[in-house]
Length: 237
Image 1 (tube, rainbow, N blue to C red):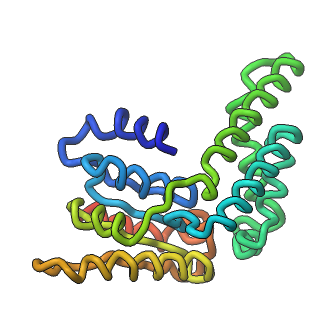
Image 2 (cartoon, rainbow, N blue to C red; image 1 turned 180 degrees about the horizontal axis):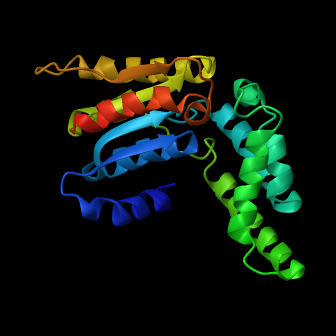
């Protein structure tokens, strides 16, 4: 995660003297928060969508890392198509699977098709298959390395520092039907705001925004409800 954070600072931050608005979803949300905490000069604001600050309990961290290693192995062995079908059958995506736009496995097919279009640059089947295997293995390494079980935990004090030091602050977003990440966002905000309340200059604390009618995949289930909160974050900068 640290290597990716450094890459973001090299590619994104030089374009702005005030930093960038870091917007991320799920793993990307964790990465946005991590980047802002490790490289505060890079963040003008952070919008975390369905993200977390990491897993604190050591036993749970180990279990999650093992689980992600197993999933990464399945991805490397079975390829992207089979993996995305299994991935979107998780309970986390139940509301997405029932959504009119994405029911009947449409989202898994779209993801697999996007991958095939990017990987299939040759008409020779053996070369295409080789590219598929190579890309699947690369993605598997990312999944294992970026596991929440291996992520440095960001605590309330870290989030408060990011919020205090950035122009647009930290906003934590989640779909209203995503009970796990709504609870996570509220807990993270409460931890951060406990530190921010000690500031003499006061100011607004870390905000939690729930997007109506959406589960975990907010950007797919309710993109129209996600745009305005993100625009508000951008306008604060």
